[in-house]
Image (cartoon, rainbow, N blue to C red; front, top):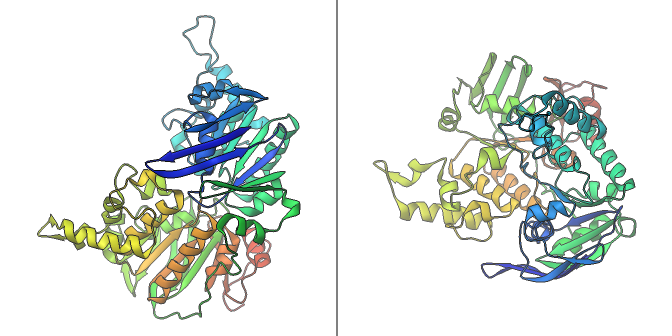
Length: 498
């Protein structure tokens, strides 16, 4: 139980006298917009942040949790949205960090036993197929998330906090995560589940607590409320139509791929993106979607095939080459690939186009400030302080900073890889309107997403990838959840016009 929790940062009130309670053996979801106070609340519970006022009671006893170490000793563990693993250590070392088995001579690690123990932990929680001897940095994003979960579960916590645990998981991996949560629930573990995906909340949660602007709006049971009403509690208004309406206005082809292949990832991919068109690219994790995008953007080099931009063959050797050709890409992982967290909003937005704000290689600070402020205002980045460090922003505002960077790059083709991952419903709607406006201005958009409603709601055409091949193409009126899922699963294949 948390009573009267209040916290402010530099005069900004993050939490205002929040009372929160949850019991053992309960799955309790915490929802709200970015900046609502969700992360601050659970960080106070773990000991990573100290409240200004209020108290924490565990099993009825007041507790002073002055650090994460104290929180861990009290049985509180957290699965972070952005994994907190040590990238240069192995899976085994990360899972058993601080508790490696020793041989008789205490300073020698018993590696066979350690690997066996880590493998057993992964298998027990349903996450098989991960090589425990592999260095974590070489794992996929979803595998790293599984290791992060295994690390938290390995110590048998009493309270397990999960912050957007499903963001990088496939549907099959999500099923395994939910099975694990239900198993932990039977063992009387309290699960605090933070997610922007309301479908998950309604499926797994026993109760849902809503925060808005640092204020507790209420706690409800999923069976007693519908999604529309829950969204209204979160943002203060209804969202009857989250996706903007727009007619299809495809112009001349900007991007054309012909039999593009990357050995071991995908082969013979052919499709096009036209001016003013939004083309959705859907597929299960591992289908090759992101790998195709990386080749277009010059981050990887295809083994065969052609990339044409405005009818001319291009072969970008690097992202720098792609930018010069007019191709920009918002990457799947904004923290790792899209932002420099210790730099300001101004510097991050400027990164892709310093030449626009320079003369004779000398930066014009006044012009830079003017250009960045215009994008901050246009995208409604909050707070609108261009000197503020990006690491202090909410996830949704960080994503807007990445978008602002690419808008300043003045690209002809914009690749968006999971553009709304980890952002709240209201921010999603803002991003969708930005994408619409970009398409209306004549930019070609390649939208990669694992969220089916996003593909269906935003795409003029939807492409489906499966096992490294293009398995289907659907016009807007043909694209349904049933068709796309069947195509992604290999039940049907469809070419345009069939």
